[in-house]
Length: 137
Image 1 (cartoon, rainbow, N blue to C red):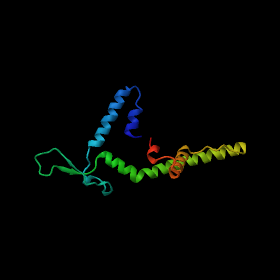
Image 2 (image 1 turned 30 degrees about the horizontal axis):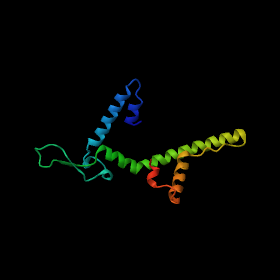
Image 3 (image 1 turned 30 degrees about the vertical axis):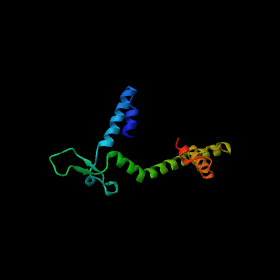
Image 4 (image 1 turned 180 degrees about the vertical axis):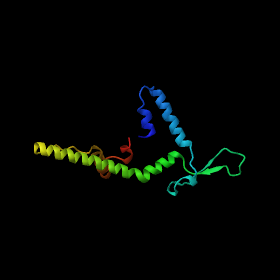
């Protein structure tokens, strides 16, 4: 469970306090820079951030922020996890269909709502019925 989900699930905590803590977590993720030497090369970047130390001649650290690393991680590995989740959902539906068919001799089809929406949106976009920007709203 991610830290944000753990914070949201905390019982007996004022919702305003939860929002404040989530804001602090996001600010930390945006501000904390991880040096390129401490991470795998797939996550390196060449952004320079000032360290604020005026005594050293080299006052820049080159590397991504924690938020940048998270975005890159999701880009590289997130789709595999999403695909696995979709496969789990499909397996669940097929198991339910099999059980329903064994019990009744027929089954009721349950469409995948996300896939249906994506297909409908793609069709409308290709037919020129709506603009891509409208899909994001």
